Length: 443
Image 1 (cartoon, rainbow, N blue to C red):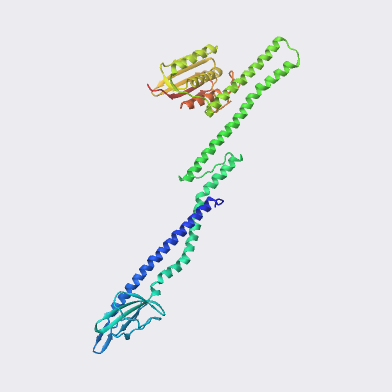
Image 2 (cartoon, one colour):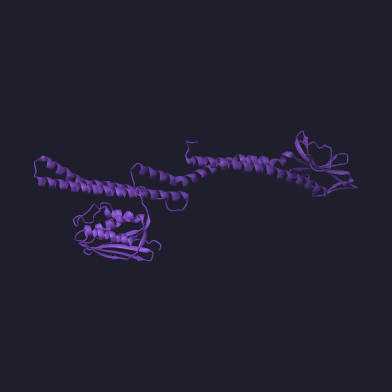
């Protein structure tokens, strides 16, 4: 049984159950029907004798029988006897002994050489007797007929139940086959875009199929993101690695002056720092994605935090003018370290791609807080704007100081952890504005 498919098991179980129910039902019908038929036949025997008794008279001319007298009716026989048991009218049933002693009362069963018979005797005036005779096999004919019908009907019902059960099971489980096929295609790496594609009918199997489609879609997006991540990381690490190896080979190849050695070592150091920054950024992003980074939310003064980060940025970035419009005493439930990184990355992005002016605004509107950082750079083309949140993506690598292309991706992740929304608006030649919206802490 363990090797059978679920469809086969359901069909077998359904068939056996139908067989049991049908057999029990037919058995009950046969037993109850036989008892009812027996009672009906015996009552009919009594009625037949009583009706014929109305047609019997015994006068001066002897026995007189009316036109309504029926010696045989519905399988029963009616006999007329004299007081001494002489048969006066009627004929005996085949195999019945007509000389059985007369006995008034309820119908009773007697055994004769030709079989069993039910007898009902009634005493009439003037010394006459009426006897009704009914063969016992006629009374039990219904169970026999029902058994014969069951012999033919039962197999047909079982076959019909088995065929219908199999069709229902196959139809019900056909989506499962599609789910298995799609899962096999994806697990084998053949087609990550495979989908089950069942219509949303609302039953359990179709809801499972819809959930699997959503899971397959997320898996495909995850695999594609990982492939892109590995490709971009390899590309980003290839250049500094090549520069370091080239500088090392050049410094080993011939004699250089002390100044040339310093310039070579400085180039190697710059590329190593770039690689270190890239690795650290990747580790931070990976920890956030995998839940490895510890996140601690607390009520904090976002106004004070933003002012501090802006002052530090103004001290580090020479030639960048910061204009602040920060409302006081705006508090929020945040992870201070991560929110600091988010603000630093937005300011760092504005410094790299702006033209020396940054406008930072922090305002509260009811239960919402809006933090915006505006630069006066060259702006971002509309078709590139949705892509800036991707890892390693840089809208224009030739302008500004450039970077790793991870800062805005990190911003997006931190905002998601705070149930916040970060958006970007830009016009080419006029600059860009990045806006963070999050919920304020309760007063």
